[in-house]
Image (cartoon, rainbow, N blue to C red; front, side):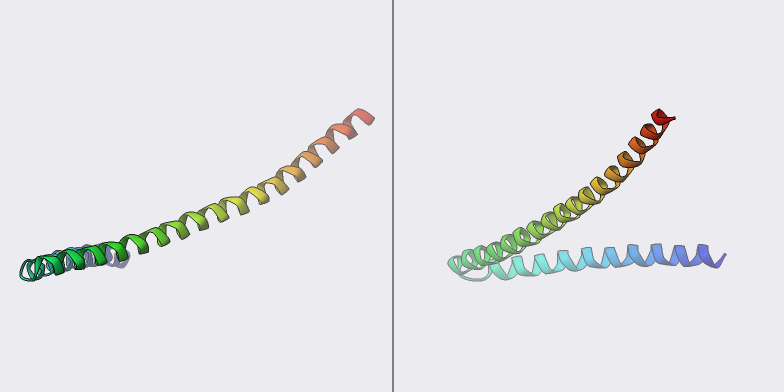
Length: 102
């Protein structure tokens, strides 16, 4: 029963952490929004533009590296598959060749 309890505790902890992160995100966005409403509109536009630029640039780099790594892994597996297929076909042709010689 300890496995079931630890599984339930892990699920509850994960759900609680997710809820806390959602609440924290909402709080930060609301606080930032209310702060931006109280400042000069030109300053608010500049801050929003700067934050958006930084977020988009970071996201672009992260996604680019993710897809690059994914492509490298696929290429590595492709070369390994080619080696295995070559070995398989060599053994298969050897079996057929030996069968004809008898």
